[in-house]
Length: 278
Image (tube, rainbow, N blue to C red):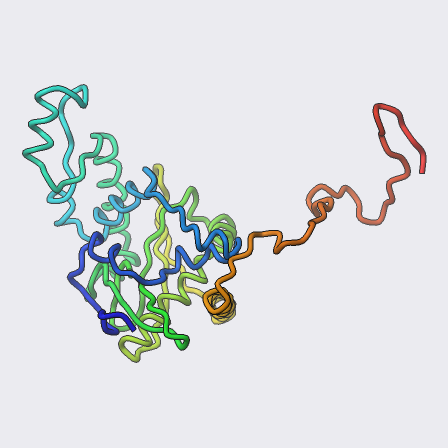
């Protein structure tokens, strides 16, 4: 293992955590696209990601938010006033007024929700963990909120409605992330905790819902993690990082959503503008 021992940190900043040379779940999921994508790891912090961290600070550490984020009152971000403002607020993230107020509204919505608000008490926000896999690879995770009885994750979404969020959660692999976090906590503390997601809508009325994950969903997430780690191990051992085609020619099929009736057969083709019967 690296010179970083298996540990849990409640005081590590995001910048410190980012410097840990270890596999995290957001990178590991790239291997589901292809090992080549994992190896490239061309992850540049996007504006959306930066704003996401701002929301997390506002919700999870409301007292810390005004200490880390500041609004520039000027009209243009250039000139002497801008330079002086940046110098006076060195180390702080400068956001727009509408972004700042928007994130405070989201924070109030979550904190005032009886179920979500209760979950964000009695624990620690932004907990960083480091551990080693069976194959000897360092792994890391940064948990939004860790309680003695459960792991709490915060998500923003277009809709908190069960029908909408269920699809989004599976599409973005939130169950895989849950399995990763549960493994991190289990290895570092010995506790196998429940996992809950607080989802808050990005726009008014900023509706809030809390979801717990079923055993079936967590099991599926665990299988995906195990498969991805096995692929990573094989690639590391052989130093081969294939792309999506795996070196083979691929075939395009008619997608299921484009099929009007699977029981019907196509009886003609259009070739060079002419209809040809089959």
